[in-house]
Amino acid sequence: MRVLYVNHTAAVSGAERSLLTLLAALPADVEATLACPEGDLAGAAGAVGVAHVPIAATAGSLRLHPLHTPVALAAMTRASHQVGGAARAARAQIVHANSVRAGLEVALAPTAGAPRVTSVRDCLPPVAATRATMRLIARRSLVVANSAYTAATVTAAAPTAQVTVVHPAIDAAAFDPARMDRGALRERLGAPAGRALLGVVAQLTPWKGQDTAIAALGALVREGVDAELLLVGSAKFTAGATRFDNRAYVERLHAQVARESLGERVRFLGERDDAADVIRALDVLLLPSHEEPFGRALLEAMALEVPVLATGVGGSRELVRDGEDGYLVAPGDAAEWARAAARVIADPEQARRMGAAGRRRILTSFDVAQHVAATLAIYERLLARR
Image (cartoon, rainbow, N blue to C red; front, side, top):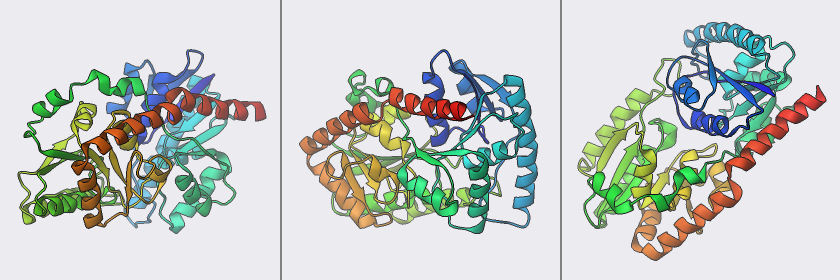
């Protein structure tokens, strides 16, 4: 089976890490090619033996803009022609887009009759551009959603869409806490003895809710809890067409830290090659998103036996069992996030049980082999139908 995968950006975030997990685990009889802009993603795909075809980068929002929208459409049209060429050169039997933007490129590309698949990994805003975009994609592509919550946003925009839910997965062997010396990791991070380490691992953007995490830390400190917050990630998407002004958001986060006198207790760690080590060192991982399509950082933390606090809105409810692996918390309610974190910090034995339950959950329900099998079954159904 020959499959062309398409991604609209070279930046590696949660969607791209999920794609790389799939590519690394494909069986030998699947010949994969990746069409994406030059950059980090292409290099990472090459490291797992996947050939790369360069295409134009595209950025854009599903909110219409008099300047940004025409520019984004022009770039997308160019990329779609390049995708068509890549599909013909690879003699692709399946063309699989890894995002909504890539799905538009694939929908517009001449793929020589190869069936199209589009992975949707975002909570789509309920605007006219979303409806138009998803209806075009749905006419020409089968949609794979990363959660039932995401699938509902797709069908709300395009009621006739064929949608299948395939949850992301993780290679639990690569996130094995038994191989890690947690004490040494904390020491390497410079964590004082006895201090609780909280962390958020996500791109810096308003919908990920780092501001809620900072406010929750402030509440904990005021209650006398010795705690510190590590923010792993950066403002990856900063083009003018991006939905949020992520640079301005980062400035607001720094101002919030200063305003709450938390300068020595909040650390911006940026992008990390050792993010798994940082997660393992944590006492609690937070995912305080306003809403979350799924939450790959939760997979990683649970595999590493770290208790999690996750937003109660979105696909995280399909992963985290409230009170077993961690807690589901209302987004934006910093006081409630502080109380949930305090419960975990105050009871190390409960935290240990939650961590162990989380890893069992990953091993039984979010295994890479299951994810690959579900994806290949979709391809086979499409080829049989064709």
